[in-house]
Image (cartoon, rainbow, N blue to C red; front, side, top):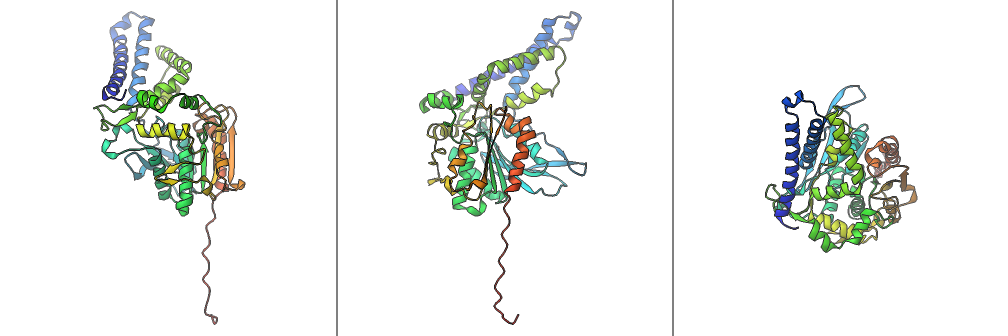
Length: 425
């Protein structure tokens, strides 16, 4: 599998399916056929339209689509997305609302690098923009990063987070969603020990695999069943000649997408069949619920091979975070060094990816943190996606997270008054 030809063949198959959809849509929509109404032609045109869009969006990075924000003055203010730090493998972005006074909470959202772009958290960002200054990690597609940029594994990812937190300062509230939760916890402990002045105020971990073995799921079982050699042989490919990262070893986004889809194949099949019927009846629209969801869900990115393999081996198989044995650049991280950062975990009762028990394990690992600075929440009826982007997030979880931030704001230290040595003064 580790050949450019395999990568290019997969891209060719995707491109062919997109072309087949476009061809079917064009042929079945030929104006002359309107003189001979035929439901089969309507279905064919609908199938082509849905198929073309499905395969086309797999290689397109979605736009943030956050252009304006309505403030308390009732006016729409432009939102400027500006890079604060730009790196080869990811940037730190700031969503700045022009003309609005700075908000009391500075929030860093750590987006997952698990096959989707950071834009998957668009609704999360929108909900926080209401009363927060929002920053986010925007990871790059590995296929577009030249080999000359070097490697990028879990240690490099952690170091990026350390640098981002240092840049933002100690008044930052960090929210890590899903995959980056264990590495964000490690980055916080790194700062707590080596640069305590830069450690954030609060850390909220949402649906992350801190201890994958606490509550096994299909995802964690897969990591146990497959050896690292099998993963490297079957999942890793070299980027083809079409992209800047030609020759780079990656875990292709299309392979990751196939894994996502297979976990709920019946649900996805029904969703696409229903959409085809809606299009054939003229009931679909460009921005209906189906297209809004799948425009984001199907847009996938490649991960560097070293990041994917080190995540499976060190986070899932060896459980280095769960055993407090994680090492970054030769320095052993000690989670007990977190003594002044309030930590909250959020889990979904119906989460089938990171089941309840995996994330809350972080609180037991923070042995140096008093109970008054620990909090946890399990959202009833919520799945993995719902705990950070659905109704459960909007109605229940977000208010709890904001309250947690507010109740743990550090009071600035008062400067000590210098002693007056002049007794006559």
